[in-house]
Image 1 (cartoon, rainbow, N blue to C red):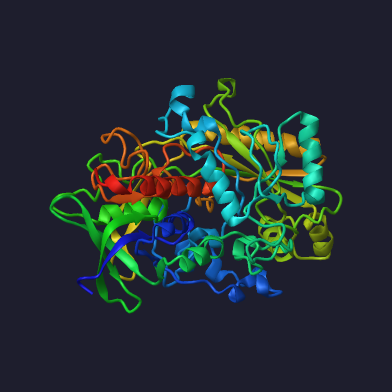
Image 2 (cartoon, rainbow, N blue to C red):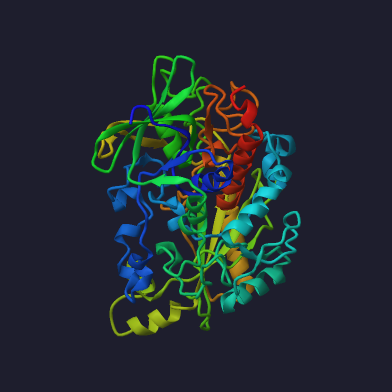
Length: 534
């Protein structure tokens, strides 16, 4: 209705949008969240079926492969790393591995410590209470005492390491390298009405058990009970503004393709590091001819993707390696902080993940030629199945303005909205970091006793989950898009709360830090309600 004005309009119901909705609900303001996808039905997840490995077409991590109604295309031809996301209530947490390591204090002061990139306007200690709040809200499993981070105590016991974890831990011990059980957003005991992890394995195809703390089940039920309205199948075309450079609401397409206008007093954008700049760049007006909130020219710039490397080790004994959560076993942060003698600045995380399930083992073996058809097929299958372990290298990606999200000149979504186009190149620093990481992975497997070790070509193509930096926060309006608590420098009633506000990328999976930042921004909004637009 033309006169319908909500107090707060949140765009996006994923990790950050859900956390902000939950936090702001206590204000009793009228809050509406619009999500272009729909609710997922866990009963339809592949993991409910014995043949889950061949039921994954709708759960492919790339929107270009899925092409679901809720998806929009992404032109990533000009990037060695493909963009991965998921559009639904819960966003990409539907498919994430729930590996949940925090950023380090050093990640917020990279310019001061290492002379590269920029410092954040906030610190680890500013976010510390919101890390803890998020851990409790969604249910995070882990083990207190990790020396790589300031002390923190996850609310739930850590996931079992299993035989493969014990094997790799002994290898790291032999090398004298740091390792620790992963903090994981997967519950190990009943939590807020959800059942604990059953170690089935197919986490990345959606968790039918409900043990993985995706935002749809970990945040949204509480937010809705507190009065937040969640509207699905709403595709936002643009954010509208008035003559005073204040956001007035959004123009969107409803489930039937009809154009609608929703007015709002405050607009909060939570569309991830690709979706957010896409929306802002498409929200052009006479006041913002280069895109909304883009007077700095930095909307879409400084895209960071965490280039990923992988090493596989095969052992001469069964390790039950395909059981348990796929992306979460243990991690080593031995090479996380800068040591310039290695030939690069900043560092990386080594993450031990599970081996492939049976069909993936067989198909991968056929593709690589390691398990060809013939009389030895079953013997070779047995050599690799449940005996292989993967080590992932999550490399810190430094911000560079030429790595960017722009609007595509030709490709559009089903409502005619321009698709995002990715222009991204791998830096020399990242190449050196990945090479060092892969060699470290080989050393770790050798120390653990692997009989065969294979390094994958880098960077992995389908590894662009972590979408960061394209609407960075900062104190200087000429060098940032939002201020230190997420408010646009140019549009005083618009906030951005997703990974696009990141100044640096760290060397770990970012979801827990994304949610801590979102909760911090929501808390700042609540503390400043009396003078929110000053």
